[in-house]
Amino acid sequence: MALGRRAGLGDDVLDEVRLAVGEACGLALSLQRQNRPDDPVVLVFDDSAGLTVDVRTSAPLDPAS
Image (cartoon, rainbow, N blue to C red; front, side, top):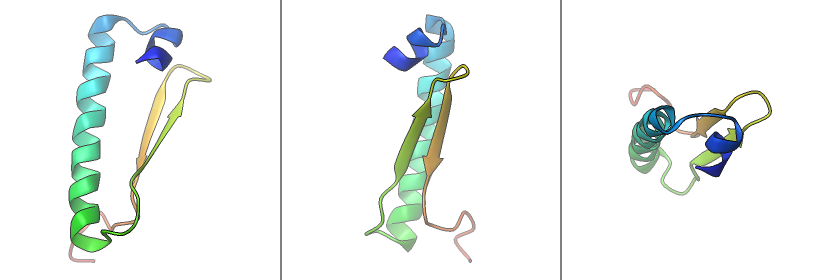
């Protein structure tokens, strides 16, 4: 993750970021497949102040919604 390195994150933190982003993407994809399979899941990376990763889905977080 070049953005993480550029933001000054060490390898141990990058491993945690990879895991967290992977889990968030897995959840988003699962919800998206069930509710709105034609809509994309969007990842937004921002390294302007550290590193922020935003996983966006148009599917409701509560599948009952």
